[in-house]
Image (cartoon, rainbow, N blue to C red):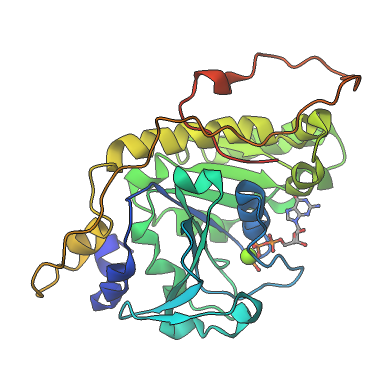
Length: 308
Ligand SMILES: Nc1nc2c(ncn2[C@@H]2O[C@H](COP(=O)(O)OP(=O)(O)OP(=O)(O)O)[C@@H](O)[C@H]2O)c(=O)[nH]1
Ligand SMILES: [Mg+2]
């Protein structure tokens, strides 16, 4: 699978991409790996259904704005979409579901919540045709059965420049019995994926989600190193793509014979004001059981997402 093979004429849907060209971060992995839980954690507004069973949604493209939710079909036509009935979107005819929110993190990047890679009810074309539009991937893999052959096979088909900016996130760290087990799994997977990701980290998404104003629980969840790694990815990708038109990937992959459209707004993401992660804030008098190993590094960053 190369980008040229995965985005044939159907890439007409990329015409629906308007607005500032922000880094596009795709959340991928097997079904139920925690992709939507991660998206909700990052965005903070819980726009996505999180379910025990596979949710079987087409890709959900979340960006900054106030436009109502829409289903974008393979031709790039949009139809209004009721978030309550998202499940009804027919994946085969849908390029993606577009959701906009005004959460801070979305001023830095778009987030694309992908369907599970080997969901028997979801043809792989549904996510394959969106993948070439992603700049980086956060690959979610449950710690209890991390990095299966099926995941490695798909990852081998992802373009090298995307892999170089991508993170492997071992979710469900809380399901392992001890810190020793967590370190062991992390080491094993790091060994097996050497050179395939920019970084590999472990997290408990549920613990991070439930941390609220408890910095200790946030830290124990593994969310803090992930936030910092994620910020680095976004900053690197932003520097690479800020000059690109919103649908440049479409032009690159499937040049349009039609006359040039009206110029689009192509202002790069606004990185002048700091967007500070909504990390938990220690309440006065709350004791920390362990000292933070190093100073909070976000003070040095011009970009930072929500997560709290
Ligand atoms: N204990 C624990 N449960 C988790 C964690 N991450 C996700 N879950 C649970 O796993 C289930 C599936 O999570 P989702 O976020 O819906 O997974 P998904 O990858 O979006 O699933 P599909 O969209 O169906 O492919 C939910 O019940 C989550 O609460 C974690 O780190 N720890
Ligand atoms: Mg999901």
